[in-house]
Image (cartoon, rainbow, N blue to C red; front, side, top):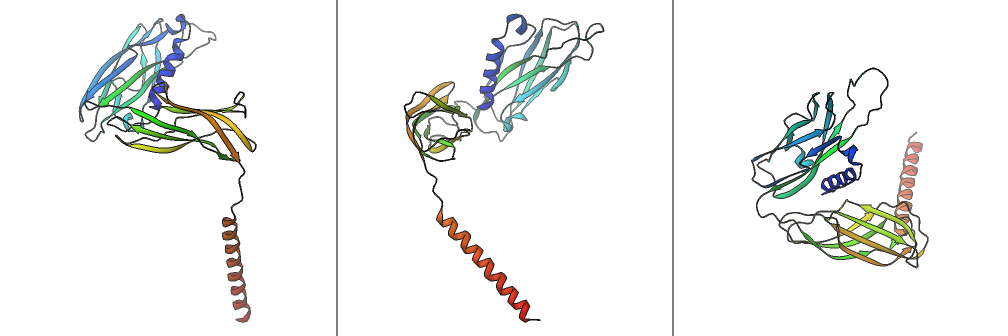
Length: 290
């Protein structure tokens, strides 16, 4: 999930650039969908890297942004570092996807990003400014037929927090599909006691997977550099699925005093006394043994 979202964001940002800049280097088609793949099967697809200026050699570096268990499945016929020769404006790249026999039924999403590198030689002498650009291909691999990847958020709660501890929410999520699934991301807006002024914002993609047809309750923490005093605050939390809000809540939470744990203190004192007695006993034995 994480890699697929990065690919969509990458292509979206690229589309905001001026047409002249985007037209200098691009990819067609911008996505590959490999559906209903069987275990042990091989899938092939060809894309074209397109550039407006073709009067020089253009080095390319390809980067896989895929889940770790899928990276070894995907290869390129030209490798991940190659050169588009001078005079070639449309350069074909063949994707080879080899699904292992032990692959799990699932939908795997991510991208392959092609980055241009500064050419070794470019035009006549003199200093030149070289701009490197990139183009990405969204990659969706479905292993198995009838794969359903979906979920429903039953509940989102904002938890009270002790001084210095990270903000956290409680999520109850039901997997309504037939493969493991995780939510896309979760966000939290921390507001003042009136619910009007934003004090901080947190986001995380570190969300656990829920097994097929199961409901799971879990806590999501947000790494926020935010120091809140004791008292009552408002917060709004959201959990996302495919770019849309799947569950949300806006409510009050409390920052509580972090009380000292006397049990830990007693254990420390007991250990210290034990060490002291043992040291004293050892010292006496050595002293009387002389």
